Length: 369
Image 1 (tube, helix red, strand yellow):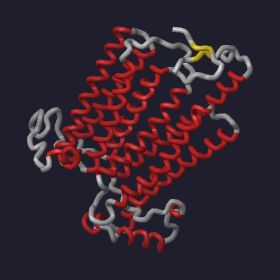
Image 2 (cartoon, one colour; image 1 turned 90 degrees about the horizontal axis):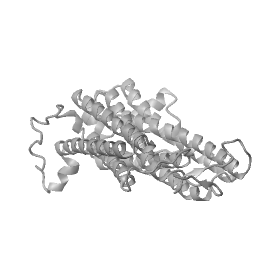
Image 3 (cartoon, rainbow, N blue to C red; image 1 turned 30 degrees about the vertical axis):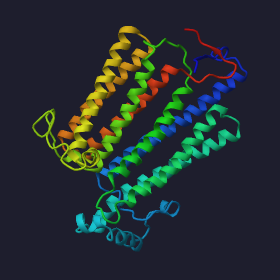
Image 4 (cartoon, helix red, strand yellow; image 1 turned 180 degrees about the horizontal axis):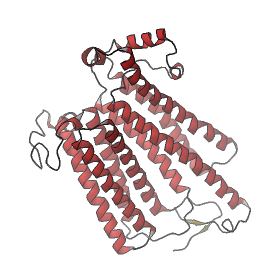
């Protein structure tokens, strides 16, 4: 998609282009709020997982569930429901009502925030749509995000239900699915947010392959997030808390101890943690190689600056990840590590989209260069 120069708009002229530019600013403000809310939602979800609070609400009540227990009897009833699941009997049998309230509020806050984001997205979307403020090319993507958000509610309950009968925690497969869908929604909002930005200057890419490398970096960020979810689901970060060696070696043994061999990639905590480490190294190598190439071939360009910021973000995230591992995943550091993953994902999406330029406005004059 071509970059645009809003001829006359920058000078304060009025007309269709100025109105469209104004509408885009409003859409970007709305999407910016949605992105921040999604960022908060994923962090609260991470804290819910790290505090083992995710199974404290054992029933799916999409509407009635907004209201928390309001009386002592309500709290006792909710606690009695929790006592019926394996997590209580096997791990928390000594928990009292006050302890239950602590984990309940984490899960309740996570669900309430998720419902709130549904309203934050759907209501303004409807208003913008009815007022004719949404360009045709944006309607399908925005409806797709809305539909994916609704589906995510079902996935969330599907995840929770996996820990209510025969397990003391949710399935790592379902946890990873839930997180990846959340990140897809987040990344899609960031993509559109960046596409609606007016590029005052359009730099040439360092090479014709640069956009493909930027896309690869985004894909690697998603893979890392998926592997991180498996690590969390298996509590794999609570063991092998050394770096750079793992179990006393660069490449530890017994990575494929289970049969069939492929199952180790998803269910062997040691293998999953090792893959997550390797994914971090690969992402770091690719982003720094991309940064060096951009700064040599297109010094001072917006693409070179974006590649530099992205590489430094990945480096900071790697440092946070190592610290989190060495400290055996305290809640604060675990949430910070998840926040870093979201920052890197957003930066990679913005950088990738930057190579494609802004969405063109009807009647706008394409920028030269």
